[in-house]
Length: 308
Image (cartoon, rainbow, N blue to C red; front, side, top):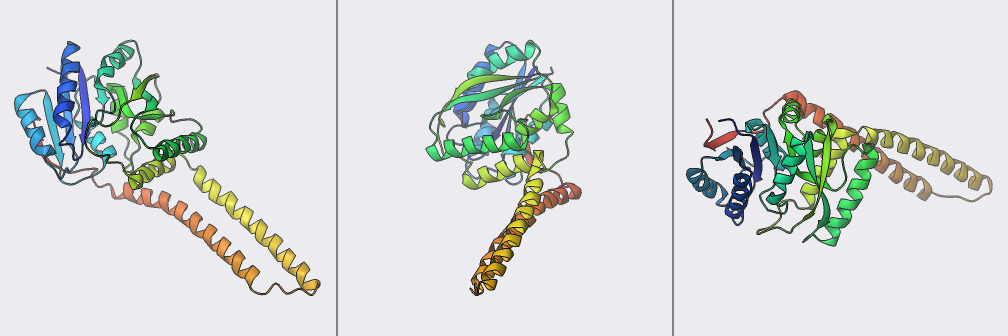
């Protein structure tokens, strides 16, 4: 029987929490009284996550597993879950239990009332450092400015999505995926669900600073060309400042004061730095175009459980 709900759970080295995640998800979904499936995507875990998932799938036919041949990242793992999900509504939730599964019935009520996307919006983020909270605040301000408010503030990937929206997002071909932006771009009726985010149930975060910066860059470059315009206007600004510096040097020379080569060296360093920044921004866009042009698969599946 076709499930009404599919729950997509990306997993990477979650051996300490995955059994508890399945228990809580099963309790919630069984209590809703409708057909469901829980789709775990093992993103190349190096611990016992896949072994535990096999045990879970062996004891629960509603638990399905897709395992990658190598680690491909959180957004690709979620994308694979969307590809395999069969439900009329798809819930995306991380395995670390920071986003409470107990909110899924409330999301379903919004969906049944006509919302095609119901996304969790964080009010408080327990267990996160001041640095992470500060960088998140700065990031959402920057991305809202660059994307004209397209992406809701303080949101992650925790959401319920209607089948219509899922199919549209699946049809998008880009490889550098920023799913919360893609869901926002699609449109339709979208409803926020405010909640307090809990600390991790167990284990360590799998989103260090490097991955956070990469995800932030995917969101900015994937949904705005304004960084290219910033580089353009910055180039104009430095060209103007270079002209002013030349005038100052000329006036000093007329007054008999020699500026030596230091002025020129300083100006060249600034201009060279600006040029490299502009080239780097352009390279990001060109590189993403190259990735999409190669048209390689997003992921390679090494094994599955309970999936025909």
